[in-house]
Length: 410
Ligand SMILES: Cc1ncc(COP(=O)(O)O)c(C=O)c1O
Image (cartoon, rainbow, N blue to C red; front, side, top):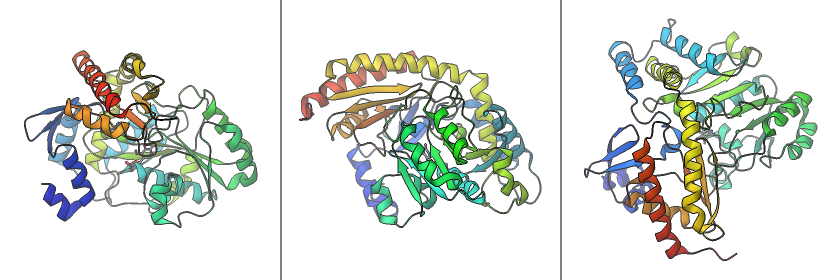
């Protein structure tokens, strides 16, 4: 299989797979992934997709029903599942965010937000250092990581990067750009290394956008749908974006789907001309069946409350496990809900820990925009046995890696 990867997918990907042991994941259920060699791995990674775990029964049942009836639509007639999924999502988004544009990936949701902003004349992009919004050309212009941007430059012109979590630093930029500005920001930076801004940051960004007439996109692709122990990362922040981006967990862990949810005013260009921004597979009945089942399941099973409780407990326990290495290998453990970051002092620590955890049957994430941060995005359905297994594996993996790597020289 590594050879097929090498010959037809990616040489680099085949090397990485081989380093991890060369096993093939062939099945998944709940918090677990199963490999072809008969082993199972606890999935505390999954890039924030699996808040409901893998193949949640309610989502798979809805998708099966849709598959047997009408998976892809003509796009000519009206189609009920997209309408119901949009209604269900809009019912759970903050006040005024009622117009849903379904797409197939987070990056496409970002593109949708950026295009809506442009259609209203907000052509000057303002993003934050460490922010991650996807890798299509528009989204990449807001993903301020030179590693991903450099090979593809020039990107969108008129783009400014400001420090994250610092509204005072954004103020003069918005004062200069005025109503040309389009700000895109995450409530907590996921790929940026689980960076939690000071309380009130988003509210202040929202206030600045109103003051200077800027368009505001809040990217909740990673933080939304319960990941932070609240429906939305911006809950409690008194901010009213023009567009909210949703993805990852919207899939229910079953079918890729994401969305941009806009106010009526922001959405007007797409309401007026439904062909202005389209994609053949967007809002397919099969994806919308997954999205509808996912948001209903989040409510029915109080996934948000469970994410909050499990998140508090995990953060405390992970801190306790890391405590012996504080001031040495471990710089900080931080997070909100079920998005938890472990920041290390040595560059190689994350890679080494991932390998040691895999050897102990646990999968976790690295962070695309923060090489020293190991990221945990466990499912809210994880049970006591799974949490204990994870903490034991983490304790052992840390002991091995700390002995091998040691603290970084300051
Ligand atoms: C906050 C945020 N925005 C956008 C994206 C891009 O989503 P996708 O990888 O589905 O294109 C991600 C993916 O990690 C993300 O975390």
